[in-house]
Amino acid sequence: MIETINLTKRYGDLVALNNLNLTINEGDCFGFIGPNGAGKTTTIKILATLLKPSSGQANIAGLTIGYQNRQIRPLIGYVPDFMGAYEDMVVTEYLEFFAAAYGIHGPQRRKVVNDVLELTDLTYKATAEVNSLSRGMQQRLSVARVLLHDPKVLLMDEPASGLDPRARIEMRELLKELRRMGKTILISSHILPELAELCNVVGIIERGQLLFNGSVEEILRRAKLGHILHVGVTDRVEQAAQLLAKIAGVKKVTIAPDDPTTVNGKGGKVLHMQFDEASGHLFSDVPNVLVNNGFRITKFTEEPVNLETAFMRLTKGLVQ
Ligand SMILES: Nc1ncnc2c1ncn2[C@@H]1O[C@H](COP(=O)(O)OP(=O)(O)OP(=O)(O)O)[C@@H](O)[C@H]1O
Ligand SMILES: [Mg+2]
Image (cartoon, rainbow, N blue to C red; front, side):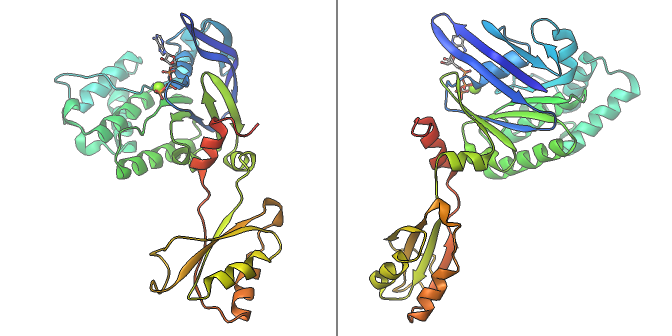
């Protein structure tokens, strides 16, 4: 659905995009992740037909950007990183204005506007001034605007930036709904965990080059992050550590600093057990060994997979 071939963009001497090759299939939700200045906005603007590449090619639905822009534009919805200011305009006027620009007229226009307001949970703000909306609401309005012409492809430049945790969750739910509707979505962010749940594929870009392209599981595998188990015991923590270190597949056992989440709090200590990737994580041996040796277990949880660490390792070039 979206394809870039050796896409390159130079601003003077600065190479913002360096031979970027991307393929995004129909129905994919592609998370485009990279630090500030990586080239995300540049790529998205090129795909939105708003910026000319210096060399290389980009296609959407088999149409080539720069040559078939008029056919491409009805197929895409672009949510920019910043929404412009609109003086003295209420939400419905704003949407009707853009619907008219997309050639939607008559009773159909009112219906479409009402539909997108409902989908983005903004019906109750229909008569509010655009400038009076909170940042989260403005972001949702920005999404509502690009849905008016029912595009197949959504290009979203950090739609969740500047939102509070609740607004982020709401935005994520909205995006999930759009995905269920069959849209192909490209969404950018600095933060890998934010997109991990939403996207089936992610691409990590840095200094205009794609460092990685694949699933979240693949990222973790490439960054070679093993699973870590947190095990709490009431006493004799050093002895427990020695016993657990002997279990097959255990790479390392360390005594963690005091952890307030242990069941009985007082006196309990937590061990962090790192497992070998190839071990298949036979966690069941852990409680057996402890119980058979008279230990009382106060905690038994797996550490959430650390996407931040994986991201840092990949972008620091620690993994090839
Ligand atoms: N109009 C411009 N003129 C000159 N340089 C530019 C221009 N737009 C972007 N750049 C440069 O191109 C590089 C990529 O910028 P881009 O905005 O694509 O990054 P980004 O990944 O979107 O970053 P952020 O996360 O900060 O939004 C940066 O070094 C930036 O300074
Ligand atoms: Mg940007």
